[in-house]
Each structure stands twice: as structure tokens, then as C-alpha cells.
Length: 322
Ligand code: GYE
Image (tube, rainbow, N blue to C red; front, side, top):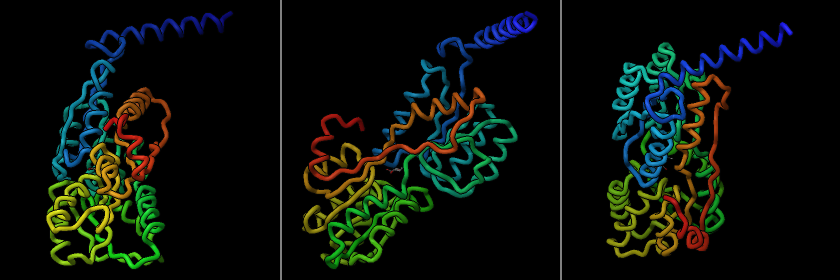
């Protein structure tokens, strides 16, 4: 009986605590305190990024109990560190980072830890000590590279093939890991790399860098590995301007699986596209809520990615969300 009374008293206390909590609510959020989240986004370099930003903004809406402070760093690491500093100074409840590059995070993450602000990584991984962040939600970039390279190996691996590569942002996790994965899949095949340069994940740079490759190597090039759709799409213009047919004279494999990428594949201008799912917002938001509630979360949540040939692209396009 004594025990039961104790339990009832405890429930009563909890009710008081909960009421106290809902009193702080500033609209929405189902009676809970609004969670203020600073999100340090890379920038707006690609179609993938646009879809990711939209997914994050929808998930971290006031309707879902959040106040989102959004920053896009124009893909400059120093801008992003400054944004995270400012989130710490504003005393946000949690910080979410899509890191431009993998390095340089320790100091600012230690500051966040000292300020007792949890950090959750989305999309891109970093090199910092895992004790400095609560969780990561994203895609398996190495596997994406392996899948893209696997297609190249099985389609072109037994004929002498000259490849050029458009790399993503130098020092970013997807650029590093996609390169590793791709290389491991084409090892021992007759595919050789003529050249590999960054196109910063953008259409404009994809075009310019491809122009340079074409000037240098002319019609020696048989294969382009674009580390994202946008750079491959930019390269299409350069290839056509050089009087060559993309998808035929130069085979193209890319990663992301945006609507524009799959359209190029369905048109026969690309030859293979590996998916990278950008719609991570809901999962990131639920991990943020769990971390703030003191619940145990996994250190890593990996999204599932598909891969497309021309037929699969045609089938997927009518219902493609991004
Ligand atoms: O592939 C690219 C974007 O980090 C996975 O960043 C992301 C990459 C994506 O700009 O299009």
C-alpha cells in the first residue's frame, strides 16, 4: 500500500512537471516546449541539396514543435564554423550540421559540449571524435561509389576505357568516400583514369571542368564518373558543344538520382545513376527529439539507396519526389 501511495505521489509529481513543461509552450508542439534547433547546411550547390533543405525545413516546422534557425554556408567551412558558434551563443537546444568538409570540427564541437548543446550530424560524416556528437543520419557514400564503379566494371571493364572524374567538394565526406568505393570496384579492370578534378558538386563547374578535359584529351575519353548528377548535367553541355554524343561516345555514370539526373538517364544521355536519398528530415527530427528527451539513440542511421538503369529510371520518374 505504501508502495502504491508512493507511486501515485510520483505520478502526481510527474503531472506537475509536465504541466510546468507545457506552460512554456509558445504555440504548436502539442503542449511541449518548443525546441530551438540551429541547422548548419552546406549551401545550395545541387538539386540534391535543395531537396535536403526542403525536407529539413518541413520536418523542423513549428507545427512539429520546432523553431528552426537555418544557415547555408555557401560551401565555405569557415562560414559554417561561424554559424555553429552563433548557434552556441544563441543557446539553441540542439545543433544539426551537414558538414562541408570532414576536418576542423574539434574545437567548436568541444564548445558545444561544454555548453551542453547536443550536436547531431546529418548527411555528411566528419573526422572528429564520436564522443563530440550524439548521432549521424545519412547515406553510405562508399557503397554508392562501389555501386557506380561496379556498373562501370561490369559494362566496360574488359575493353580499354579512358575515364575522367568530376569530384565533389574537396575534403567533403561524399567526395572522399565515393572515390574510394569507385576505385575499389574498378581495381583490376581495363578502366584507367585519365584525369580527376573537382567540380564542387555544381553544374557550372561540372561544365567548365569537362570543357578542360575535352580540350586536353579530345575524343580519347570514353567514360565520365560524375560524383553527383549536377556535375554530370553540366558536363552534357560541354560534351555536346565538342560535337560528341553523351551516353554513346562518352558513357556517364553519376550519383544522387534527382529528377533531372533520372531524366537524363531516361533520355539515354546518362547510362547509370546511383541513388543518394536526401529526404532525411523526419528521421533527423525524431533523433533530435529523442536526444533532447534523454533517450538512447544509435550512433549512426544509414538510409537505403537504390540504383537505376534506363528502364528503372523511366519507371521511377512519374512518382519521383525530388
Ligand atoms: O551528392 C551532392 C550534394 O552530401 C550527399 O552533396 C551529399 C552531396 C550530394 O551537393 O549533390
